[in-house]
Image (tube, rainbow, N blue to C red; front, side):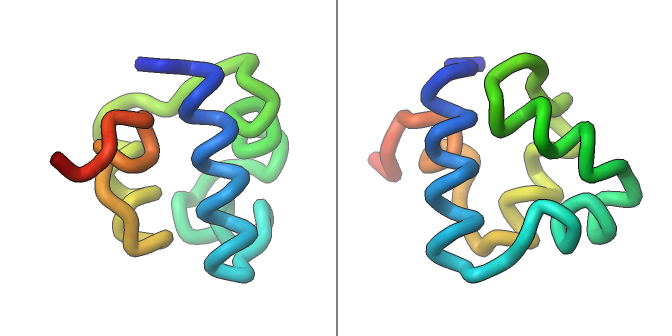
Length: 70
């Protein structure tokens, strides 16, 4: 996964959707600390979780991973 690009794209998607780290964590059934670690580029979600994040934010995996929608 393009970790640095993912963390930046996740931050952007959260801001644009006006959703919080806590809302995302609650939706995923994880902790806000886990989401924070993704946003800082320390960790990254597994594929199943990435797909859930995409659903929550109405984004595509390609967009969050920095590949565009081509």
